[in-house]
Image 1 (cartoon, rainbow, N blue to C red):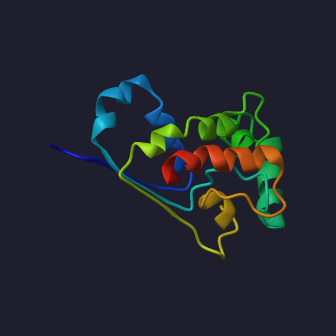
Image 2 (cartoon, rainbow, N blue to C red):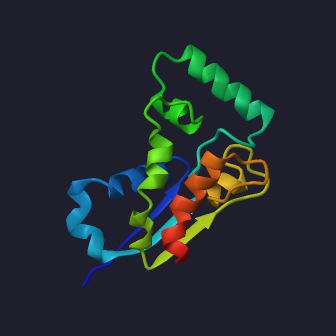
Length: 139
């Protein structure tokens, strides 16, 4: 029986997680095997990014006519899409293998968001997102 694995980089990891919640992928869920992401901002970009990245994010949000993904990544979207994606985490528990890769020198997706853990200065909502995302995988 064929297995289905995903390898994604950056926002592609969020796209895969969103796709897993789609009813269109329901027939493939029993075949999920590996989920690998490289520098994906699983917990958004609202905490602990460099001032250069924060400035660029701010400028893009202000000067690009529509940038819903940027609002979501900055955790400023009115519908809470990135947070909702973390709430939909049981999808990751369906994989036999889950590998999240980060680089300490990455200023765009710092390790705490790429590895989905709450950094020491995180607020309760951020900690909840991290727990909801990886809790089912680690159980």
